[in-house]
Image (cartoon, rainbow, N blue to C red; front, top):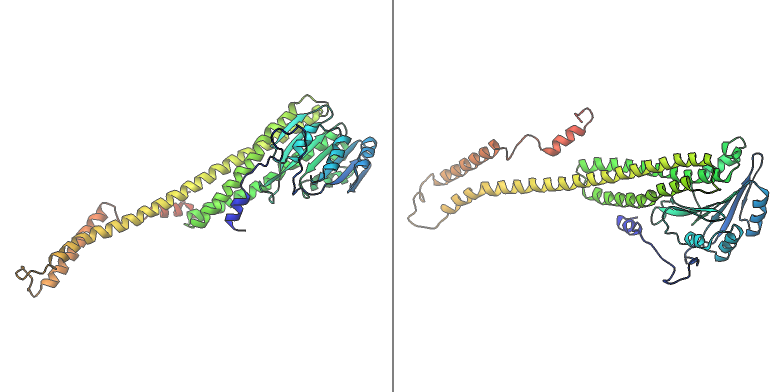
Length: 378
């Protein structure tokens, strides 16, 4: 994929599918949304059940028979299925409207029957590098809605399959919700680590003089950083709202875990801010290098033009076609003219060197390369 196509794909866009004046709580399904499927995991300390492609009618039975039920809804294209799920778990229509409008920023809202939380889950295949994950926490259930297949919850599922794991022993829905949110937050760190490696490579390439292609890639990385920053920045506030919210669905012990999750989100913000500053520094260094190179070229051309100005004057002087011109018929006139030109050029070069205009030994670029070499002063 070319950089041009990537720049177009990463353009942040918000599509409001509801027309102005539409009744609040109206679900407007996107035309390109995937068909809805339901996966389910129900467990206690001794048992676990995993089912794929379950029906909405089966959900009510599991919720009444198991202490913790995780319902993962994949795809937001089936309006009837989504409405049935909302009816089963008593999800507010305003919350369902936000579920299908996938441009939401991270937030947390409390309703009578559950707590609604939106987080942006990293996904490199999406237009904005993230996809919306909607999470509903109830008395003994967690319902998650995601736009398509593929997520960062494999570690959570593996821990649930081990009977002696902490997740199986903590038969509380709020602990499961915390682990899912924490998995989303932790999924950003490998992406930012890879982005840091890319910035180091771009910095080295910029210092080496590979400017044109590097600058285009740097622009793309900065756009990715800005998109991730838009997703992560409100995540901190959403987790804090869950932490301080006075709701019966979150226990005091889980508030301590959420505080740790909030610390991780702050670390993500710090990394993104640092990477954004690094992008700006690399860009400024690139522009300074281009300006320095242009100044060096202009200086060289100016010196050449300055040296040839008196030489052109001498050549023009003796090139005048007058019959009675001194030295015109002199036997050594040609050699004398060349000697005068060489003397003038030599004197000017010596003058330029003494004033440090040329042949200064090394320039700023050479000094920077020396510092960046292993064993250098830097």
